[in-house]
Length: 237
Image 1 (cartoon, rainbow, N blue to C red):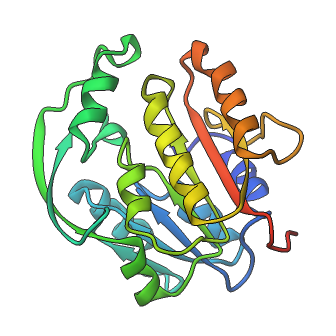
Image 2 (cartoon, rainbow, N blue to C red):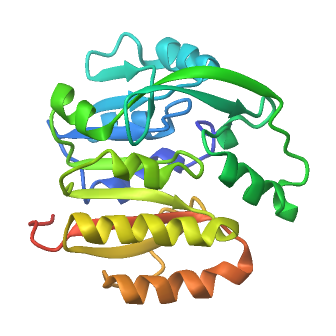
């Protein structure tokens, strides 16, 4: 369903062209069934698609397994390497999560009233530092891990050039914690893209305090989106 939306790949490619180009490496953490993978390959990037859910891994292998520019990594990402239990929603697998706290928060939100986390799966966990050691430093890293963002960033010891993480208004404090971790790692500027519009809400990149203001305005709507961060010191297209 995510791949068949008219014009979606074009919007994705337009958005990510600011961050990725031919020969660049992109990390897609929480790749699901590969909507970003397809757009990033269209831009000429090499994609490291990281996804722990067995059903999604099978689909990724069918769709992208023969593409030498795509590496499918069947792992979760967290603060430390090891093993963990993922709570899976079999009817809405995009909200499967490693975070019991996030599930409790999201489950109390009216928009998630029909969602159930009805299965458990054991997954292996790696860290961003380990992924970088294996595949090189990415030009862009997308983090879509349903409330596990701060754990992912805790497993990173250096600033990345650019990245994004999902924002859910019901889990506002968790987004602020991720924002705080990024400020510890480097001198970032930020923007916000509502839902899946692939358009920035602010006309320019803003400092952390201004981003918090943007999120405070978005929060009452209950609509999710993505926070984008880029290093101020980097040269941009």
